Every structure is written in C-alpha cells, then in structure tokens.
Length: 110
Length: 115
Image (tube, rainbow over all chains, first blue to last red; front, top):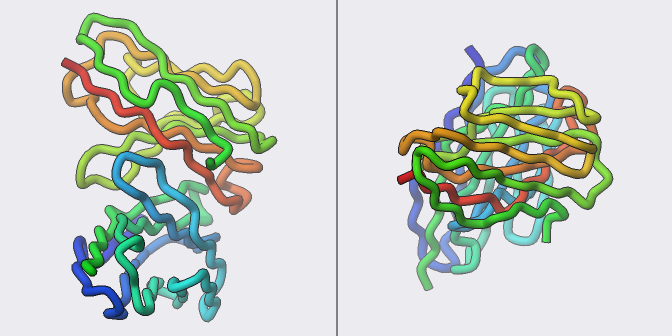
C-alpha cells in the first residue's frame, strides 16, 4: 500500500538553528515528490517538485533533497516567518494519485 | 495570490441546509480538484475533473455533489451534512491531471462548520 510518513510531527527551533524535516515514502513507481508550506487557516503553497533520486532544489533558506526512499527538507538559519506546517506529497506511477503525509508543524522562536 | 480563488472562506450550516462552495482558477489549467483537510489528518482527495469531466471520485458520500460547468469553475454542493464533515475544503488546479506529474496549486480553502 502506498504510504507517506513525515517526521517529526512537530519541531520547535530557535531562530538560526538549522534542522531537517523528513518524508519517507513507499509507492509503486515514484513520478514526483512535492513539498508544500501551509500557514494556519490557508491553503498549501507549492515549494518544490523532485522527480529522481539525487535531485536537489533550493529556495531561500530551504533545500529539498530526494533519495529512493525519502526526501529531506533542510532549513538553514530559520527565521520566525518560516513557522508553518510543511507537507510532503508523492505522485505514484500506479494509480496516478497524489498521496499526502500528515505534515510537520514547524515553530521558529526569536 | 495563488490564482485559485475559493468562496466563501467560512461557512456555518445546519445539518438540514443546502449550500455550495465555489472555486475559480485563473491559471488556464485543465484539471481541477476538491480535497478535504481535517485536523491532524492528511489531505484527502475527493474529486478530480479533467476538461470538465469527472475522472475520479474517491468513494465520497452522496451528500457531497461536485459540478464543473467549465474548466475554470468548480462547485461543491452540500446537503444534509453531518458534524463530522466539518473541515477545511480545498480546491486545486493543475495544467493536466496528476497523472502527468504536473504541480497542483491550491486555493485558500473554505472552512466548513456543520452544527
């Protein structure tokens, strides 16, 4: 069964304290892995798409990486405005469905 | 501004009411989606439309009825809902369906409370 698991469920950081969020997946033929950011009361905002193992993408303080079993979202020197829930989703090659993880709630304190 | 606009942003309805959620996308996309997001649970796909034809219905109860009159507009008609249907309902669009690996863009969501 296709599955996406994100860890940790919640992460509290001090401003400037770098860390990583994990997204582990099991799908039949990965066709894409997506990262989204969701602020409270708002819809998910697209961040990155990764298609193959070894691929990396960066945007400001965020860097996403992909292996055959998991993806990491690295946050370098985070700021309070990076506080949000980060969602990972995978597109499987079998049913063509986008399967979401439950998200990691990130809180960055000044 | 994501290019996907949802109205209303907040809706409170009784279990015997009939209401509708509206979604409009300004991105020129051909596929539109309804997702449900409940507290502490992953997003659940409800319906997928591609070029105004429904291509996916994830065993959603019939009290939820989608309508896609054209590729830019999507509605979710609601009737005789239950309190457990209270959630954030997200509309989304993509260039084609997810089968093509295209990125899905979300609206801000409609918060639904059933009393």
